Image (cartoon, rainbow, N blue to C red; front, side):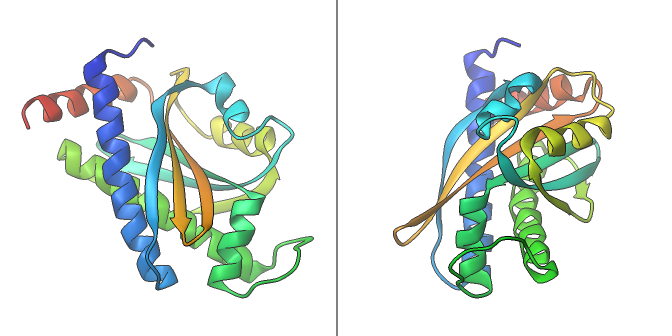
Length: 203
């Protein structure tokens, strides 16, 4: 789908507001100031998602959330393992290396994904003036292609594009990069983009 300038502006605004909410929520969780910036905001063809996160065979941490309400959708929060390890070092305790993840660490990853996705769900709700809720998050550590295939199979979307928001969180000298993919259900992508454009035009 070709994006006009108004729609591109709408996605960037959506991304910036969501990043602001996410930085505030993570600052509370980590008890330190967190800065968050949007490095990319666009529509992404589904077949290109794995390339965005480093390739089909790249091992990633994926948090899946089902969004229900006026724009039912699926959302993925994808983090590199190096970013996840830095987060866990801050949230639980630093370790030299992790061969596997404990139940506590997986719960922490799910909670971070829940906070980050919640920030963007709130941003959409605020911008569009619509009601949305999110499910309990599911977390998986696996190859990017595997986790995305499972998620796409559970989606009822016929759209061939997802909304991509890439962000970079910085805390001191450390940075954590995350990617958010939102896949609205059938015909809901056009509805969402139309509402976003209309809201921005009307202030």
